[in-house]
Image (cartoon, rainbow, N blue to C red):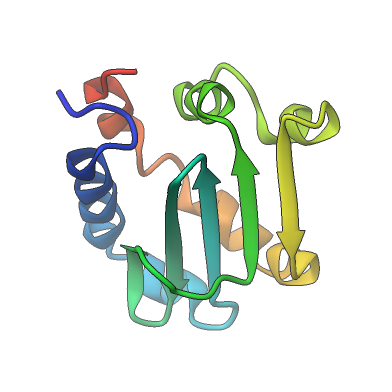
Length: 123
């Protein structure tokens, strides 16, 4: 059972993204790179014509979500939605909001690619 935000968890997250064969088609017209910053952990979810993947390091992002570990865990478990976290100030958003809006339908259609990982994660 991988620990939330551990190296193993990030690898499993990457595997879940890469396993979804519909990502390349969905995001070909509106590619997006979404960074998540949780304390010192930073990763970028890249969704484009090549498919989905998780990158670390200095990968640039169109938008960045930043929060503390407690908020990130609540979001990952589905106990808190992003809109409520944003409006309460627990989640910060910066970057190209229009780019996020352009990819909204594709992001919604992506569904819950992390459902299996969530059940196997130790929070």
